Image (cartoon, rainbow, N blue to C red; front, side, top):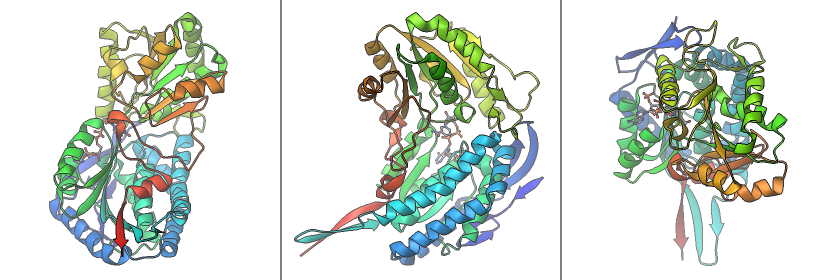
Length: 471
Ligand code: NDP
């Protein structure tokens, strides 16, 4: 049993003033594996105070000094890679191959941000004025459980680059993972008070951070529902907000796509991170004329998707993070069934031989755009196949959503796919691929998928404010 009974404030691991605790579970088995002690308002206020004190000096640090810190943070993560991977497999239920990729990516964020910072225009001299991009102040970062390391590092790295200090409220469901990550940050020799981490609930720690007058920016990843609460609360003190919210991403398989490639790719995109991914391509739009062929290919390709056995590098799908998330997925499967969609593979309950919080990877066909499963973010391994008659109709269905985070197109004609991509309302559109290899890209959403962008210089931009000094 692991006990997480410290928070990280002013460069020290310290016992929280808060007395509440929360149990931690292994989602593969449902067994209790730990307890986390939760911080309260006093802990959060102390963390903000430490960040405020540190900002006085850190905001005046040089690009060279901050570059060295970013490099050390990168190195510390790689030095603890195995421990980080182990915690993510045990606590989050992420298969090892995906886990390794995410841990490496968390380290890479610091390197990429260092490069972006080195070419960032912190000052611009005009004929009569100097424009100075000043660090905004204290950042509050509120993160979810579905990729603990990448979300925390993705919010921390640009804060360091900009010269800001930070208070992080991670998800309690990731407490074991966050503990090891915090030890990495501690080993990296960051000036005290620059990074503060307070375990605690959203309604307690999250609410204090969102309302506190000394917080300049709230950067949040999570549900659109909580994003709305944070956005409106933050507006009372005119905080800047960066909101990376939900998605219901379309994946358009065009008539000319090579289905032998497009279908396995669509399943990989849809079941990415066991379906617990904001960018998962969960609405698969297919030409009506090819439906029967596509159904056969889905059934055939599902046999190659390995579920469970998380330490096997071939495994692709793990359990849901919690009983609550498992129950949510079951409710959506029931809703699809009730509204008349047909279960092609999967269905309710656990996969054979697996317990814990494992849900069956499920693909629905005969789905219409009005159904709840086609509209709402399920955040589990449940995909909808929707047919279209013309490309125009495919684009209309793709855009018929409150979200706009990611979209995918499979086509034999890249130029045509690019033309269609320009008509999709989405923060990114990936063509014939699941991965954007361009590290200099921004990440974020249109519509109710959020406000602002993370990654590369776009992330630094969110944490600075231009000041004009004119003579
Ligand atoms: P939430 O959006 O509820 O939580 C995300 C983070 O916000 C957590 O750290 C949470 O803390 C915190 N939070 C909750 N309430 C508040 C508040 N009032 N003020 C400030 N912070 C708050 O996500 P859930 O974990 O509950 O998941 C629910 C659904 O959200 C999923 O099913 C999925 O649809 C979506 N989601 C989307 C993600 C994405 O990447 N876009 C990531 C995770 C979830 P606490 O843990 O204490 O609630």
